[in-house]
Structures are given as C-alpha cells and as structure tokens.
Length: 171
Image (cartoon, rainbow, N blue to C red; front, side):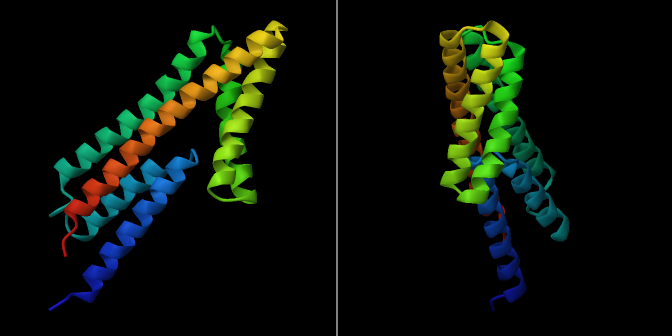
C-alpha cells in the first residue's frame, strides 16, 4: 500500500532541493536551503533516515562548497594583485547583479547579471584604486573567472547534496 502523505512529502523535498540547486546556480544561498530542507525532513521523520551522521555530512559538504567559492574568487583576485576594494565590490556586485538579472529573466538573466555586475564593480573599484584601465580589466577578469570556478564547484556540491538526500528518502 502506497502512503500518499509520505510520497507527497518526498516529492516536496525533491522539489525544494532542486530549487536549491537553481538558487545556487544564480549565486543565492541554495545550498543552505538544501541543508535546511534535509534538516526539516529529519525532524519530521524523527531523524531515522536523515540522522545526525547524514546531516553532518551534508553540513560538511555545504561548508566545503562555501569555502571553495570564497577561496576561488580570492585566488583569482590575488593572481592580479587586486585591491580589497575590487574584491569586495565584485562580490557585492555579483549578488546585486544576480538579483536584478533574475527580475528580467530568471536563470540566464540571473547568471548574466551576476557576471556582468561582478566584472563592472570589480573594474570600477580597481580603476578607482589604481587609475590604470589595463590593470582594472585584468583584475575584473580574474575575479570573475575565479568566482565562476568557485560557483561551478559549489553547484557540483549542491547536486551531490541533493542526490545524497534523495538516496536517504524513505518510500
């Protein structure tokens, strides 16, 4: 006999975690949504299948993804001796651009907005700091490439987290 409530709950978990992957892809905290969805599922099923070990593994993966994203952007910036202002501006610009781009076209607009705004903000901040257009362009490009590599890794972590969560669901 199929338990319709269990099936509906599992499908909801899958839907929310897949939304989490999408949020991660546009630079929003989707991995956190994925983790908290697993935590909520664990709570509702008395931590039988989504137990402390599973949740600690998911939390560890989440932290590794966040750290990789941060480090990759910083390494890209360090490569070109970027100013701290350029790094901070590119980070904030990426978030703002992603949100604005989402308003125009969710998905592709989000990504384009995040990349474009990150580049522009990094460029403007570095140019204001150094007064050198070529240096500002190199810094902005390196920051964006580093952020993109970090985001790709973080997205892979999100997909892995979702696959792991799905493997733990009871049917």
